Length: 248
Image 1 (spheres, rainbow, N blue to C red):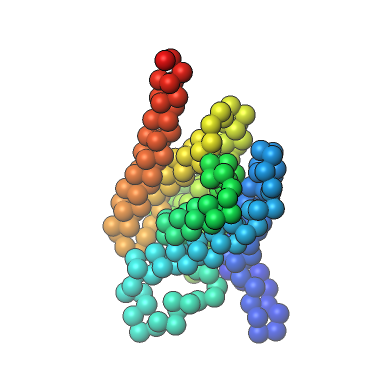
Image 2 (cartoon, rainbow, N blue to C red):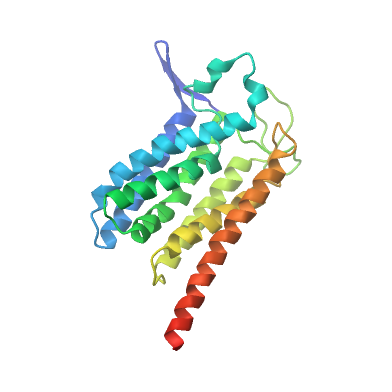
């Protein structure tokens, strides 16, 4: 755990912010490469990524604040805490996706191809971001006696390193999407697979995570199942429609 990498005068460079920036750069690189592979202008991802970053952070922060209002009573200045602690992925997804879809339509780019490029990049970015969570000491797990349990400074209780669990699963999802990309025949498949993978990963990890609100884990697991079911259901429906039209 190392929340602050180093200080320069009175300025602190937070590890969480650094890893989020690294996750952003990795995502842009993967998405740009995928767009180029599809014969599209990979540089178009820069504006899309910038909008996704801004709206994603705003949505993720708002979602976190709404779920933890009691923590901010009497200390509203923490709403704009610049060390970037307190972000919820689902909130970022809820605001970033419609914002970027509107932008892609305005740029007159193929929605499916761009969504697939973003979907391919997403698990790698999430894996890197979870390293930031581990260094920051947030998003931790329940007490554990397993050999790989970790003890963070300020506590004597070993806990599940849920940040690393999710990082490993995200990397596995990224490898799976690279494999699936070679067998993809339709736009949107990679994006839907990516959403389904995240939903299933988050559902599993929530069994080991701890939250200030005891009901939060159930809430996130329900959201994860809904996301995975929606993505997989839509993917199977699209494949059934293609098979049906091909048999006619």
